[in-house]
Length: 487
Image (cartoon, rainbow, N blue to C red):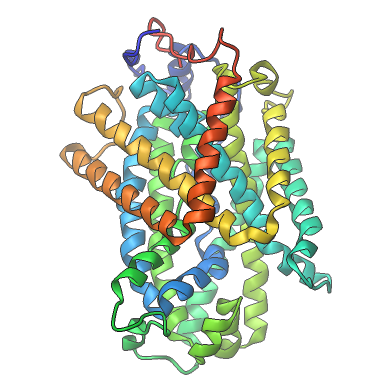
């Protein structure tokens, strides 16, 4: 097989966005197998709900406190900006060039012509989305159980509840993309309600407020005035809170006028999440009443809200946040399913013909069941929630790091097909910054826990290599047809 990347067919210029999308798929050797029903708002919702910024901060701000106390606000401000305005923008441009299910997997393979590299990036994202499903399920299980008067004595008690949430999310995805889209839109509304309610209450309800200088308080995390390393490590927080940059890309074969609307929705979701996150983190930090108690708490945001504005509001916020997080679970599973289905469609996975099957409702049914099974396996390690969260962020970070390097190569070598979403002469600068930030982020994640996270990622890479070698030789690495431009 030639190692040169294929020549991509030009995207046909037709009057109808739907016709354009279908014609482009046909040019690539694919047919329209999924329902193309998502508009701009729903596409925005896929990304916004996957990020789940308000509810995500509710459960992950503890990471910032652990590394840098209230001063982690500045880490969120800097790290989040680097996430959104470098990697997020770069991935959005590449999604516009390749609006295909599979996202990063498709982009990497089409630019480089190296199916093994495409396989690995797709595998990393598949693992990231699947582990994220488990992580969300485990993190919200204690809250959901609490609504029924059940409390957990140890982490193993969360397992049946987490499994129940994963089963429910899978049933919704099996029901069809329209049903998932309804829940997705509910998730968007829940997220907006969380944001508006939290900001409004912390601004309107009278409570003791810390001065702005409090945002430089490290909470005892620094020694001898050494703040730089804790500041850097706290930039892991926005990696947990704002990620899944190609969620709309993975749903692009179900999006109308995908080359325009998928990247537009992605950027809208990323930027709005970042801006909202800045205000939320700042207001939460300034509402702290008892810093030592917050630093020791396993649920610091709930403690802050309890003491600042009362338990009643904290409980309502918690309930809405859990609904939003469950919607995020469904969307994360949906995008992971599309990665696996895309690999199966190309024959680049064992049992590809079985995994690529689409149900009468035009749902990748066997891929859905497989992702469900993998999530269940990860749930057995639910006691390692912090490790699972870090592994998710690292798998995302490495996959996006590879794709922005590959995308930069395609950009400067003019190998990208025509695409309506781009940044003109600024695009190369964005890609260079995205590469630099990806390297820094991955280094920070590994440095934070070399044994579990670093070695864990090596295990993911090794297992991906083994699975790739299990693909029959007649299909392995043959997904790129340089005559048809078909990956």
